[in-house]
Image (cartoon, rainbow, N blue to C red; front, side, top):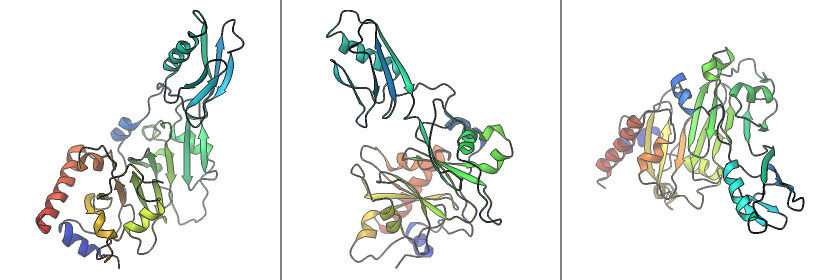
Length: 323
């Protein structure tokens, strides 16, 4: 049976309490400016991008290629060349080096015909959810406009915020009301691979981040536990180190650390009930300290404050358990 919040507080410190109405940390204008993509970033090739290779006087190796899922293009005569994650200049140098094995001083032109891998995904309360492709870093307003009008399915539901999931480790909340009221500071530029999730006021969600198979947002159901959320996310991935799992409780702005073994043991003496806005974070191998990856849950929270919170949680638990 899920452990009550009171029991959880007794285990991790009395300052960890439930709040009546949890709310996500909406980013300030200054915080958003730090997370915004630059207007003209250096573009890195990705799977699906279409490249045109022209070698002057050598039509037999001039070709149009699609970067495969493995990051490889296949050039006639030259063979396979890995270009995934490279800049145009880096890919040009690699391809020209391979051409030098067959030609003397080849004159190579490398162009991008279609930026297919430059994608942003929109989910939630939009008319046309899905992936969008851009040849440049789009603004948040452009992405929302392409997703269609925000449908009003319930007149009592209001759209006040949206979450930007950046990779597996960053979750950024944006004041959507301020954006729609015309404040340009909230119209930030998106980064390649961003996922935008738009809930309404009636939605209750938890978020599973870090080294899990399917990181993202999951609807909070009655009596939902950490194990339930992890199961929906596909569980820890191969590079996970799940001995310690972090929970960021948005309403209380507290970080809690739990032992994974305590919730999967056969006796199931403990299992933690979740609240709206909770963020579960599963660490991956190679990270030096728990404090480091806990800070990635909410990059808009002060690094010092977040680090102290995580350390305090560990100290509190050690004092209570004697370990």
